[in-house]
Image 1 (tube, helix red, strand yellow):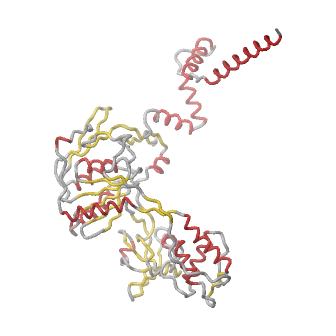
Image 2 (image 1 turned 30 degrees about the vertical axis):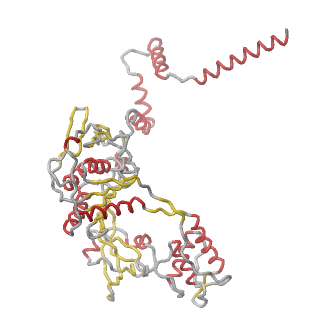
Image 3 (image 1 turned 60 degrees about the vertical axis):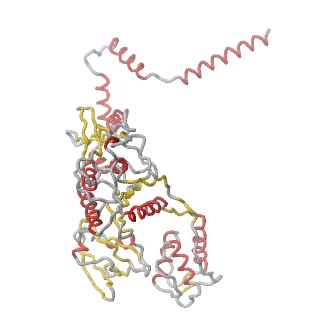
Length: 495
C-alpha cells in the first residue's frame, strides 16, 4: 500500500510539474495584461479618471528620462509592416543618407605601374587638372619626400591634406622633370567609372544613383562612347544599392533610344496615385546592353536592369538581385527629424512587381574562388642575410614581396630603397622591427613563410565579367540593333 501511495504522489507531482512547465511556456498576452491593468487603476484609483490617456502620459515621461527610447518606439511602429520605413535624428540621417560626393585633395587617381612608379591614371575636375597634371605623369616626390615604391593608398594619404594648403609634387613626364605646387580643395568624386573594352565595346560601372552629378558623369561617358563608335555597352550594377529616383529617370530617358516607351510604373495608396514613366527617346541606337548584377543590386539599380531586360534592350549576367521594389518618401519633421516612409510600389513593364523576388539574370554566373597559384620563385640561399654588400637573396626576396603586394616592378639583384621600403612595409603589417641596411635570415624566413601560406588562400575570378565580355563581343560583331519587346507584353501586371 505504501509503495502504491508513493507512486500516486509521484504521478501527481509529475502532472503538477508538467502543468507548471506549460504555464511557463505559454505566451504572455501583453495586450490583455495592459488593458486589465489600466481598467483596475481607472476603476479603483483614488486619483484616476476616464479622461486622461495614461499610456501616452507615461510614455512622454519615459521619453523625457531617456530620449533614445522615443526613437526606439517610433521605429518599432514604423517597422511593423515593412523593413524600409525608419525615423531618425538629423545626425543619423546625415550619416546614413549623405548627399555629398566629395573629398579634400587634388583630384587624381593614382596607380602603380610595372616600373614601380606611382602614375596618374585619371583626373577629376579639380586642382590637379587646373595645375596641368596629365594622365601618365609619374609622381616621385610629395613635399620633398621620395614616394617611389609606396602603395597608392599610402601616397594618397600624403597628397591629401587640409583644404586651402599647398602640396609640392615632383613629377616625371617622359624625360622631363617638373615641380608643381597644387592647392588642395574639395573635389567632387564620381559614382561612375568607364573604360573601353575594345573599339566597339564600352564598360560603365555605376555604383550609386546619387543625383545630378552621377547623371552628368554617366552621360559624359555614354555620349563619348557614341562619338567613338561603340555599339555595345557593359553596364556593371553589382553592389549598387540604388539611390535617387530622379537620377534613374534622367539616365533612362537618355539611354532608351525610342520615345514614349513605358518603362516604370509607381503606385501609391495615400493619396491614391498611379504614375507610368515614359521614355523621352534621347538615347542613341545600340546593339545591346549587357548588365552585370548580384545579390547587392537593389532598388533603382534593379529597376534599370529589369526594365532594360523587359524591354529587350539588355541581357543580364550574374546573380539574382536583392528584390527591393518599394519606394520611400523622405519627410522632415517640424524639429528636423527625418521620417523615411514606404509609400509606393514600383513595377516593371513585363514582370510587374519584383519586390521580395528580385531580378533573375539571363545568364546565372557567380564569382569563382580558386586557390592562389604561386609563380616561379627563385630559391633562397639558406642562412644568408641580404644587404647592399650581400645581394645573394635580394631578387628572391623581392619576388616574394611582390606576391605579398609589397613590391612593384621587376625584381632584380640590386639592394635599393625599393627593396628596403617593401621589407619595412611587411615588417609594419606584421608587427616586426623595421630594418636599416641589412635583412637578417630570420626575417627572410618569415617573408618566405608568409609567401608559402598564399597557397592556402583563394582569389576571386570575375567569371560574370568574363561572360559579359564574351556576350558583348558577339553582339558588337553582329552590328544588329537592339529590338524592343512587343507592346502587347507590356502591362506592368507580371507574366
